Length: 173
Image (tube, rainbow, N blue to C red; front, side, top):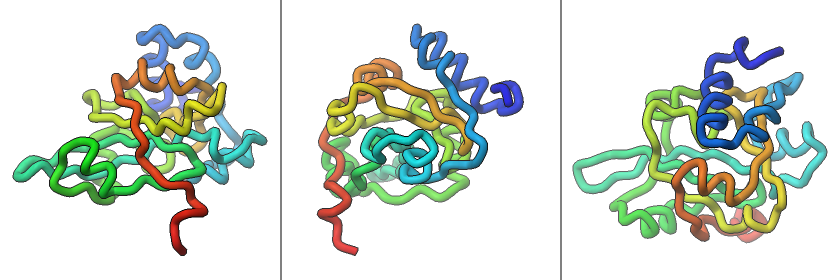
């Protein structure tokens, strides 16, 4: 399958190429099955979940104004919404529903890429991703991923490096 079969993936590939990240654009993989979680993506790629860059969209409230927040977290972490709110100066950060995600990214949950959105998003990049020489991110569709780096994510998104999460094993069930 090629990226034209998936318009959002083609848009991500174009955004990567436009940003000068040609190697990432050429490295987009269309997997045989959807990988909507870090664990599924890691299994499909044969890597550790911590090397997956989850693109999580949150609903950030700033008084009367609401904005989308993109938190790129390691697949080995969960974002802490109170930490996210403090980092961006929001009064509240909460889970975004599928319609909110689609409206702000043009992509479906499970396939949200760091780029290719209708407009740039406020972005935080989990510093733990720095520990991996290559990280894999979704490329606009739940079957698509591409390789990049921590620095590549920062450059691509204009995001800010931040400690956004706690290790999964530290989160109580």
